[in-house]
Image (cartoon, rainbow, N blue to C red; front, side, top):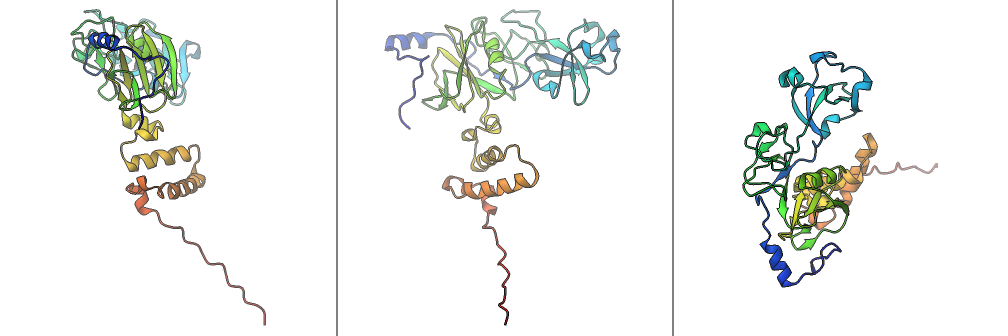
Length: 314
């Protein structure tokens, strides 16, 4: 409730200025989708230490050796399927837990180039076929955003990811989201803004100002965009934000209760987790807005065992 909040980056403007903004052409009005993961390239799994004439099993050859290394890359075909002719001593990365090693095929920056691009990343193009996009992405239709593109350019997107909407990011319709907001300075293009924004895994949305190329990261829940033609807001889906612990983004009472329980009892395992969830659930289910949650239907008052009666000696 109340008036929309105003932030320092969005001063009040005259009707003439607003009309000028409205006349700006936002290329690719269709939503551009991104994933929360996969920024650095496409992984091709290595099957042996000397496959394709490489030297993959010595640690001094690895550009990265981390747990869950797959989360920061696209997953592609095996090295054998990709082809030894494509191996030109690119970076090698390893998952230190599974010891699986990969060749990294770099994502190509296409930025509106009409032909010749392969392994194109999210939000980039111009693509003509899904096969030109990095692992798992699809080639969209008239969906590119940014000054490097012209009307009709097609960009790669992830159908399972979030979307770009016209306007600055809002916590709800008409309410500017200025909590948990961080300026990332100016970036050359939309893909680079998204890349910088997503370097913090706690992000929920990335915001881009078209004329000045300013970029912001949001870490609080973002569930809408203003519709203003001078900005673009990429935000994760409500379900993904809910999974990140932004409970106000959860779609129903049961999901919201689960989100609060996960936050309340984070880091606890075994009996401490069980007892924590029991106590937290009892408190949550007293609130009227959560009465319909499936978890609250089974909450009952704990039973207590009466103390043993001690008889007085006669």
